[in-house]
Length: 73
Image 1: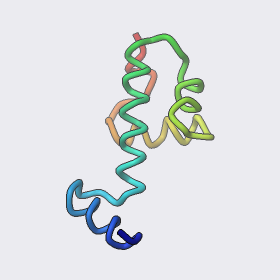
Image 2: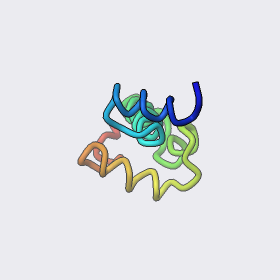
Image 3: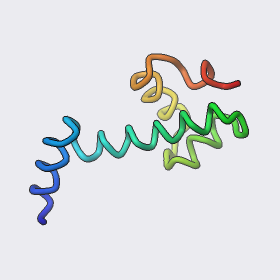
Image 4: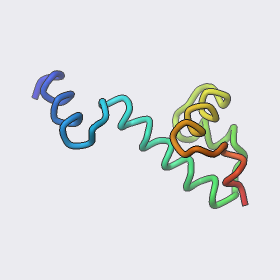
């Protein structure tokens, strides 16, 4: 498959672009880690592949409607 075919297939299956789909997956993993309560927000942001914890918090809030600190046990 070429890049455009992958893009179209992912978009058709998920309704999201490949980058949006990957970001959503990483945010979901971040949510799971937050609910475990073993790491702080910055550590979780780095663990799931974000290089900027403030960007992680911004997109997390946009995705879930709550800030990451709202999910900490």
